[in-house]
Picture 1: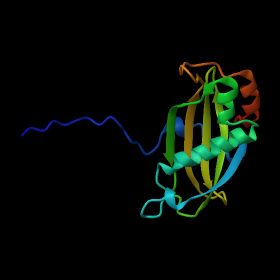
Picture 2: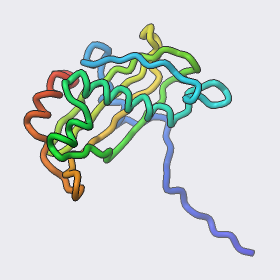
Picture 3: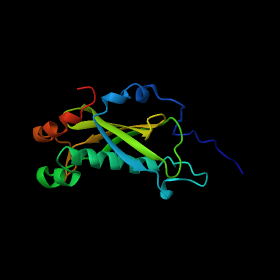
Picture 4: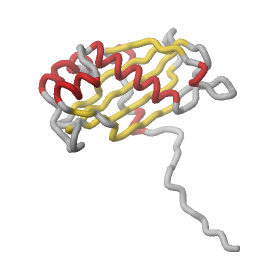
Length: 166
C-alpha cells in the first residue's frame, strides 16, 4: 500500500496584516448593535465557535441596513440586485463565552463600482475586550442572471452615513 502526501490548500496564520490594518478605532464605527452569545454559538468548552461569528455578522449587517432605511430584501425587490459574499475574513483576538453580551461595531469600509466592504468588530459590552474583526466583501449582482451591476446611487446615498472614517 502506498500513500501520497497531499499539500494543504488552506493556510492558517495567527495574524493577517491585511485584515488588522483596516480595523477602525472605537469612535470610527458609525453603527453599533448588541448581541448576546447564545447556547447554539458555543462549543463544549463554552467558547464561541468560529462559525457563530458569521451569524453575528448577519445580525450586524441586517441591522445596519435597517438603520439605513432599507433591507437586503428591499434591495432585491426594488433594484433586482442580490448582494452575495465574495470574500470573508475573520481574525480572532480573544474568546467570548456563553451569555456574554457583545457590542457589534460595524461600518462600510469601502464602496466600489459594484462592491462594498463591511467591517465588523465584536467587543465585550464594557468595551474592554476585542473579540473578533470581520471583513466581508459583498458584490451587487443582477438577481436573475447573477451578473455584476453597479451599486445604484440611491443605495450609495443610504449607506454613506455608515462609512468608516467619513
